[in-house]
Structures are given as structure tokens and as C-alpha cells.
Amino acid sequence: MLIGSHVSMGGKTMLLRASEEAASYGANTFLIYTGAPQNSKRKPIAAYNISAGHAHMKEQGISHIVVHAPFLVNLANTINSKVFEHSVSFMCDELERTEALGSDQIVMHPVSHVGAGVDLGLQINRK
Image 1 (cartoon, rainbow, N blue to C red):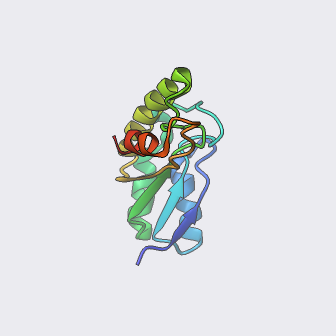
Image 2 (cartoon, rainbow, N blue to C red):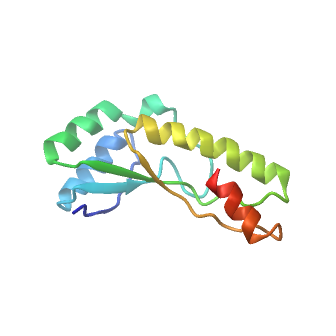
């Protein structure tokens, strides 16, 4: 069974900090945001301290990382092309960060179709 919680990946030690916090709770997994969930500003992947984080995870028996996509991603909004294009671009970048962190899991909310229809919103989110 996997047990963990949302932990912080802030500061200079990034993934190492997240692993240390999760280990302090006795967790074997944890959930992180790759940056603030309310904006699209992100540090370069090289700043995430991935090697040190993975080494600590291995030492502590932490086997999984779950990434949570930021709240501003709205792949269901096909009405506003600027929002939609930014969401698609940002989500592609977020998937790269997720893979670089060694995670194969990302949580995202399909959010609002803003009048385009539920079926279209779900179809776009599946892609």
C-alpha cells in the first residue's frame, strides 16, 4: 500500500526537501507541485535537485512521486484560444518535468468547458 501526502518542493533543495518531509511522516510516496499551483512560473529542471532527491528516496524506501498539475491549466476551454493554447503548452512542459522527476503519475482537474460542452471538454482532456 502506498501512503503519503502533499509535501513542499520549495527552497534550494527542491526534490530532496520533498523526500525529507515525506520521510519524516513515514510515507512511501508523496505528491508535489513543480512550482506554485496558481501560476506558470517554473524553475529549470536542472534546479530540481533530482539526483539527491532520488538518492534520499531510495535510502528511505520512498518508491513513488505523484505530480499535481497547477490549477491554471484548463484543457477544456476551447472557447478562449489564448487560454487553451497556454494550457496545452504548459501541460506539455509539465509532462516533461514529471518525467524528469521520475514520476509516471500526474493529477489534473479537467476544469470548465465554459460553454463548449462537456463532451468536447472531456474529449480534449483525453488527448
